[in-house]
Image 1 (cartoon, rainbow, N blue to C red):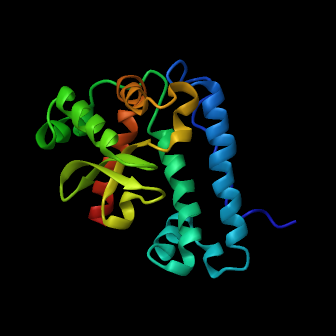
Image 2 (image 1 turned 90 degrees about the horizontal axis):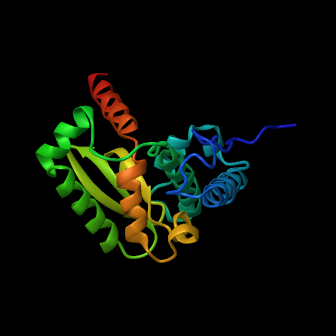
Length: 208
């Protein structure tokens, strides 16, 4: 029996590990239904397609901007975005940035209060579904949002951490209080170790 081209990545922690900030129920549904659904749909869409033999990142790049491959892009990008989101959080995370990220954030955005305010303001201003990211671009850090499945790498930006702004990410726990969810992400969940690892990887890629 032929194996699926893509499989659902495991969460990097238990489903209850982010409580009380994200409930076990939310994480179970978000990962086990929404994320799983994107992966399953992608496999169906790629059956018999030449893109099926490529890594997920290549599928995203080769389907981006093509109207006849928009559905492939949406499901591939959402599969990637969700895996990145899980890694952007950790139990006992949150608070001030650390390492090189701390210096870049302070240089280009401001101290922790200024960063939190800018991140929260951008999240509140984002209309509809999407994502908010801290990215590295041209040697600086920036806060950007993307709509629906869109993601920074297709725009020449290196994602460092992200927060999911789709309603299914927070509605069971926070109802319509997206701002409270983003605050919880910043104060208790964001994984600065992951951000620094992504920044370090981007430096290594520039050397190649």
